[in-house]
Image (cartoon, rainbow, N blue to C red; front, side):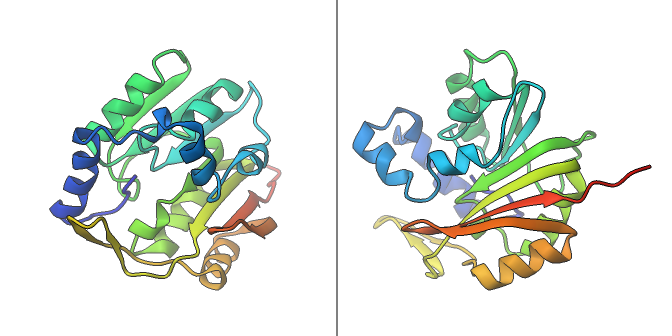
Length: 208
C-alpha cells in the first residue's frame, strides 16, 4: 500500500504484515466493517463502475477493495510497491480473469495506457509529493474519467505498531482539494466518514 520512493524500513513493514499473515481480504466481518469507516460501499458506488470501464487502484495492498471493484469492471489493474503484498493480491484476485497486479512505484511506473477510473484509499499518507501524485493521476485518466480518493483524518506523522514506527506524510482536506483542482479535475463530491475525507473528482471532457 506504499506508493513512493520510500525507505527500506517502510517497505519492510508491509512485507512483515504479509509474513504475519495480516491480510484484510480475509478479515472477519467486524474488522471489515471497521475498515469501511475509511471507505465502504459509498466509496465503491461513487466510482460508477461497469463492464466497459478500466480501473486502476493505487496502493492495492492485498486486495481489500480490489475484490469488490474487480467484479464490477471490464479490466482491473492494481499497483503496489511491496512484492509480497502484490503477490498476495494476485492470489486473492485469482478468480477474476480481468485483473492485472503490478509491482512498482506509482510515481515512476510507466503504465503506457489510460484508465476510466482511478481510486486509492489509505495510501496517499505514504506519498510525500502529493501534488505530483495527483497530477500523474489526472494524466492517466481518460476523458470524463473519475478519481476517487480517501485520505485519513489522522494527522499523526507516524504509524506506531508497537514493534515498529513508520514515518508517514499526513493529508489535509484543504490541501488535497487544492491539488485536485490544480490538476484540472473537477470535484463532484467531498464528504466525511468517521475516519476519512472522500473526494470524488472527474476529468473534464475534451473534444477533439
